Length: 442
Ligand code: 5AD
Ligand code: SF4
Image (cartoon, rainbow, N blue to C red; front, side):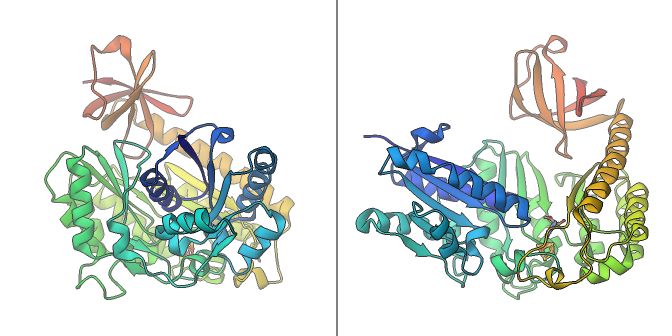
């Protein structure tokens, strides 16, 4: 009888990509994907713990499986990812939800298939959370079931060494490990041959690629340059960059290579030097702004995005206003703004001067409104410009495309004869409406 799987994925692109590995292992074992959770024979929760809100949502969704499992006794429930990687979490989860069958962490996703085989044989709870990560090259031989046939993620490194004081990632994803350049080239070449058009290189801090000494001296700019020089019609993106490690060489490589998208996600987190220091970000406002100036000089068409935390412990109104000013000065096309969330085991969690939730809420609303106004103006400024876009879908009225910055561009079918999905085209932007760019072919 046909078996079905359903995967809940929470959090960042890293998790999205890891779910593609999990799907591969399930399909290798004969399961097929379903979009109806009730129909599934196995449900996997690939979790995130970056903020408390993520954890609460996940707990709620796991809880909702209880009635399904009551009527479907053979249903297998697996929980993995960053949340389960935290100390004691496997037993906390199992206590709260005794119907969970398999728990494993972000460190050993590649072994899920084996855990599932073991569970099917022994039919008893599998706690497979391990502390050491030892999977790098085995990962490259894996079968991914990619979510999309045009856009592909490629991990270039895992882990983070930065220990920003608010962040739990270094605790759950461990130290930085870089993948060998030649296996990355091989994977990207394969993807290009298979027809993927946008390749996004992934790492928590891509700019420190190779710092662990495992890449034979290949640094991130070199890796990016080599990939951009591969044959084929594709675009190259990467995330995330830590401002402290973004070199002049990287700016040069980006500026000279037409295949590298002129878009950069550069989390600033805060605009006040006092807060940046308390966050252990290793740069100050002035050096960040100087970096932005250099980037804009080298690439005047660059679109910038960022992450910002409001309400970090000790953030005063003056500190917050410095973040507002910085946002106005940089002019981001997009900003992901978060309220600081206390994370167990991090340094910031132990600070005494925590900011009340009401102030955090008020600051996030103010900053979101400011950013909305800025980004609207920036996208309106694109009207009249020509953008290279990838046609990636269609509906009754429009061809849908993505600009390099990731923004949706809609092209009315009434204005063109036929556009092929998967092709890059030059498109003139004619309007900006409801958060989407409107374009027409040149
Ligand atoms: N609270 C709020 N936001 C956080 N981030 C990381 N840790 C926390 C936290 N404890 C944000 C940062 C990071 C993004 C991925 O999530 O802005 O860049
Ligand atoms: Fe977290 Fe900082 Fe590492 Fe990003 S760089 S994952 S914010 S510790």
